[in-house]
Structures are given as C-alpha cells and as structure tokens.
Length: 242
Ligand code: PGA
Image (cartoon, rainbow, N blue to C red; front, side, top):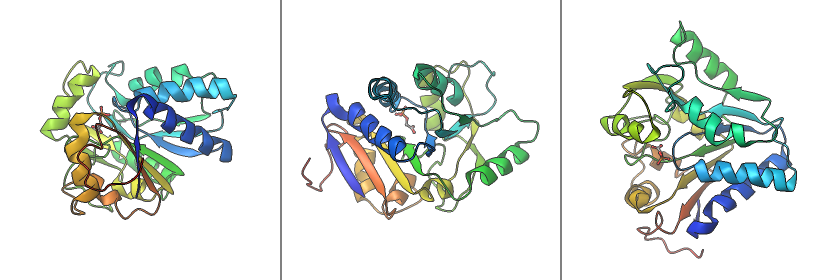
C-alpha cells in the first residue's frame, strides 16, 4: 500500500490530478466511483481541471459503487443522484457510459447478474471512501474478500449516516459491488479526510487483516494508494515522509 499524506488544502487537487493522469494514459478508463461526502471536492476538482487541461472524459466508463434500495426514484440521497449532482453535471463532456445500479428492478437477481457480467474481474481503477466501521461501499463488517455484487442489509451506523446524504426516508438495504470486484481492480484508491476517520484509517492500514474491517482487506492489494489528509492520517504509527 502506498500511503500519501496530503495537506488538507491540496488533497482534492492531488487526487484529481492523479485521476486525470490515468484518463490521459487510458481515455477508455473503466472506473468505479463512490457517492458520499469524501469524493465531493475531488469530483469538483476533476471537473474544473479537465476543463482547464482540456482532458476529455467522454470515453471513460463509469460504474457506481453502491445504491440504496427502497427509496423514491427522485430521492436526492440516492447514489445516482449524488453522482449526477456532484460529478456528472459538472463535466463539460459526460462519460460515454455510466452504469448505475437499478435497485428497483423487477428482478434484482437479473440486475445483479448483469452487473457481475459487465464488470468482469474488476476495474482499471476503483475509488473508495471508508465508513466509520471500515465498510467499503456497502460491504459492511463481515464481508469476505470474495463477496460479489449483492443485496445487503445496511448496518445501523450506515442507516444513520444516510441522513447526512439528504435521504427522504431511512434506507435499510442496498446493492453493492462486492469486495471481489473492488479487490480485483488493477488499481484501488482509498480516500479519507478529517479527524473522525483517523481511528478507522489506523485500524484499516495498521490493524489485522480481517473481514471485520473490510478496508483492511486492501492491505495486500498490489496497487493500492491511500490518499489521506493530515487529520485522517493523524493516528498512523508508520512514519512515512509526506
Ligand atoms: P463519506 O462516507 O464519504 O460520506 O464519509 C464514506 C462511506 O461511508 O463509505
């Protein structure tokens, strides 16, 4: 794992610059993107840097990491709504393919099978936030490294945190891409900012490798970069130069 500690004011720009480098190297990048608060500043930076540097995202293929189930189609807290609001709507050129997750499909089983098929073994690049319980997407504690795309019941903490995303009613379940698809990606970036993430970041990066903390399962990944601001990195024992 490569752990980068970045000054708060530079953090989003650094992630965005790295993202656009990947797009320039591979304009058809297949990328898995999360919703949530952490990537909001990154998405805004990607949009403005892409305009500035004239990098086109038109051929990028985007897959949404997870989606709540049981919410109204226009609920502003849905993952699709957040991705649209914070990222896609800000882009000059929208990616050719944006694969959302249809949790309201008449056949969830068919939707899950289709996602498994379309994703294959993983992505070129996967961006992830980390939950306060170590979850990745909706891979809650207890998720095995080989867990695939599936319907999941949300951990009480995740039900609670959905309110921060403006949901109109509390979701109890969702569909998430699995640890298998995330760990199978060529490259994974774990993003975390702020003091409230410091403890779980320390456990994920320096604690035991265990499904009890799904983010810890990233430790052996051959190409995982962790982008932390100073506050999220504050409890790490490992002393690496910035
Ligand atoms: P956040 O959520 O980016 O809103 O902090 C991360 C997560 O719970 O996965």
